[in-house]
Image (tube, rainbow, N blue to C red; front, side):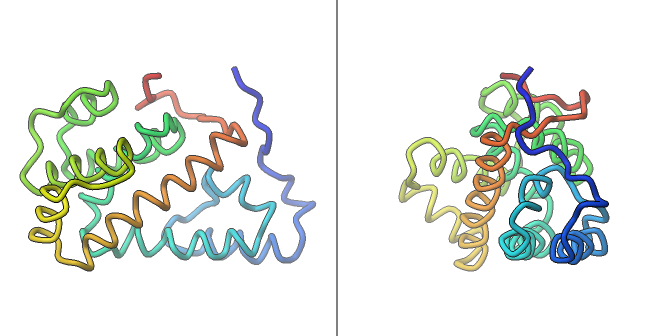
Length: 184
């Protein structure tokens, strides 16, 4: 097992800036300081900006929470990010994503039961992660289904969760949940 390079900081040793920024997260819709923010707490000003972007993308994006959760899972799978997977797989099920499709994504298999809008999200995100571009077909499909604002939000969701995956993968943030584990 990899050693967590940036485990949670002892709250009694937080700077006033760390305490202020952590409290904003705790008081916000997340309700607690989740694992992605444990390493980010070392840079409170960065954490402030990152969490603000994430709060918009997760709770208010133009594509809605169901499709946002799906995009997060595709990103987590592409980055082998177990913490994000364990947080967002149950949320995706709660939002109505078919558990069989979640399992397929986890196993790097084409999902079988995705709805039309979910399939568009899946293909768009896979394009973006695998080829670092999006085909004209997947781009046009996203624009037609979600409009320009929704498509930009979708790109940003992929980028935001890629940033979190990079931070947690580099710092080796531990996944404390065994349920909904990511298969490596």
